[in-house]
Image 1 (cartoon, rainbow, N blue to C red):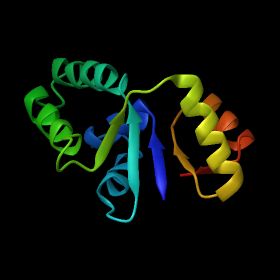
Image 2: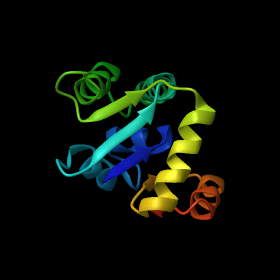
Image 3: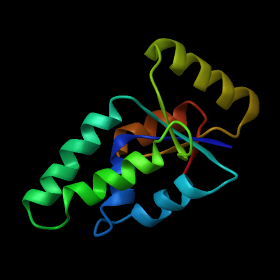
Length: 123
């Protein structure tokens, strides 16, 4: 199964004091699941990690090291994709409709509504 993780889900997998992180981390490290996220996630994750360090909750370098390990092109388990948005959305929609196994993980209420409307399995 391929699971798309938006940046809010990815961030929570590293900020262990936030709800929902453990299940996302399990997805990222499940050998039977391919997890992907968009290239813009790098920026959003970095920003969240810096905020977490400024509030004294975490050490930025530790968070960044774990994220870089998970997104390493050779041995990582979270693929970062950089593609034309319209093409990706069309392919994801077709996959969801034809196979019914495309899944979507998000904490964003509006994205949940769209994912349901497009036939994704919500995680």
